[in-house]
Image 1 (cartoon, helix red, strand yellow):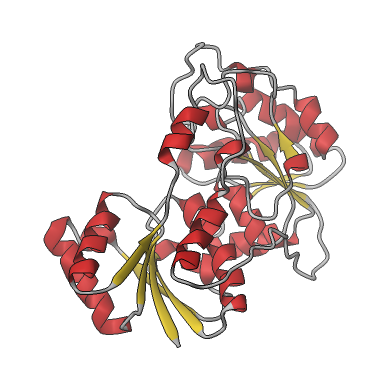
Image 2: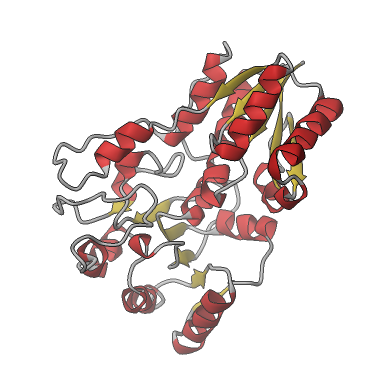
Length: 321
């Protein structure tokens, strides 16, 4: 059995995107085992994938070079890997790579395509093209090791009967999030026809969604009520998920639920559309030449009016649904 030690510590959505890649890679290479090292609270993302050992760590326990050196030694001692896969490529993981190389290990790392993403998000560049999808960038790491992997990019729905619509109106950055009054109106329209379940996290989001639940009949807020495993189980039971370009889209991919995704400052061209999700289920304003202005949605709007989200008509979303 060949053992690959892989690490990716954040962000939540990016870690979630590794899971379907692992699943298909391991199905096609049954004599391989992956040790996935990540934050403890991400364990449920991988719980039903055979041949994965999840190693949850608290990064605060391994600060600085000496902390990372200790982590590297602990992982070697516990797992005796054959290859190292850096799926993150940030300073912390670059240090780990160096330590492993010095110990004689073969280290393979993701090519994030930083230069092409910078060009894509240059607002003066009018020649926007689809870049390599992030899931393919993860798969490339294993291909470089000499393994074959062909990604299906197909959703795998659970066999259970699906009903209701999930709605996750929040995102980490303003550039990714529909204005809340539009989301409220969308929920109000949808709840006339279907049961709508709200997803979110954090105190402020939970307060907002609980208020919506009291004001809009036929809705239920699950924000702050479920752990990750329960959340995945609930999303698996939904007929449809509605999400911003955020982690909830990737959770829907993991459990085989279609997702209508809403994009503002970011764009599927950067490669972050959920695994198995269709471009036909994407809602965005296509004729804004400044889009995308950001890979992660964390930049201020250079126009100052957030037109990509403020001018998005919720009727477009309703038509997709």
